[in-house]
Image 1 (cartoon, rainbow, N blue to C red):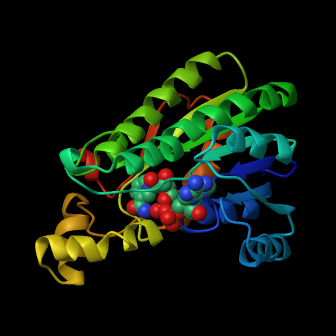
Image 2 (spheres, rainbow, N blue to C red; image 1 turned 135 degrees about the vertical axis):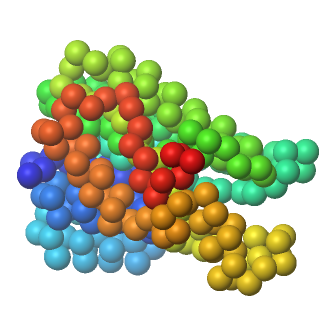
Image 3 (cartoon, rainbow, N blue to C red; image 1 turned 90 degrees about the horizontal axis):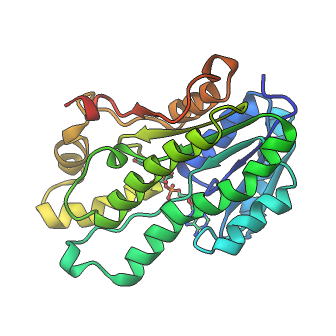
Length: 256
Ligand code: NAD
């Protein structure tokens, strides 16, 4: 059980981050939820999770595109036994047409944020004598697709940084791993459907089956609960010697 541990999950008011936060809370960890907004719904989500699981849940606003905010999130939480770097965005465009502001935002949120949060969290893990870092990469951390230059670069980067931090903490009771999901039907993926429908002149069903799940041999989306379960496993004693590696939850994508 993760009772007594505090888990910080970046980008966790929706999608995979929220699913992971729920599973960590169900496993007994106190949870810090985060996004760049600071709405009533954000705080209501924390209250609902606390009421249903009995752990302490706080919502802390911080914009993961800003390095100071990333570090402030960890400092404000005051304790960080489990760090899940999940915040991420996507933009799809050919490289010669790729908007520079989108490139910069994707690299900042999907890659740089994890540098800042890990740098701030590691001293706390060392002081507590235990730590787990779980970086949410992607099948695109191991393979590429056209039109996703920034995303693929950021996700390959996070896989590399995961290995580096694992080596720097190898002789300590701290592990650092990356989870590489295939397609999961979250708001991030939902948002890509209309553009892809236009690009290929296809129906929604055809886009899902023949474009998105084309490379996912299971022909099924992975679920946020499955990703939450994988994160909980990486925090368990059984996973104490698993460090510096990736776990794919991709229905066979990277086996192809
Ligand atoms: P999502 O859009 O549902 O969730 C993204 C989360 O990040 C949200 O909570 C959002 O508020 C937060 N966020 C965005 N910008 C932020 C910022 N500047 N500061 C703080 N928080 C911010 O997307 P998702 O599909 O749940 O994606 C979560 C992670 O999983 C991302 O890193 C994504 O790359 C990765 N991933 C998703 C899939 C998939 O198929 N959905 C596959 C592989 C990897």
